[in-house]
Image (cartoon, rainbow, N blue to C red; front, side, top):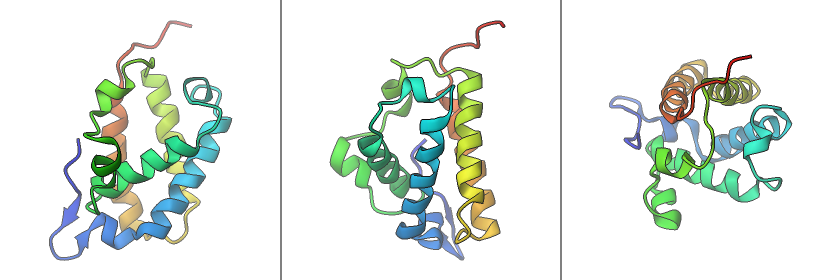
Length: 135
């Protein structure tokens, strides 16, 4: 889940997006997460460190410097999320917040937005570790 996304003739997705646009996207995303009734309960009230970790992870995941590895060690996404009930509903809410943040980031070109959303949709599904409860 941590192989960088690269198109050989256009460079990495990170290179095409750039660090400032990625940082703006992460900030927009976490503003939505904080307000989401399905997601807010499993996140800390102060999302500062969480956003820093997400930005560091996405930087390396998208083909930039391995910031997450350097600061926090191997991502081990599923293992780090096991203490939280990541249901299909929560994965969908997470993805909806990300898609909205992508849409709200006009600096992202349509090709990059599509590629990013597609890659992160796979990550969201991969993180599910608990079934939805009925009702």
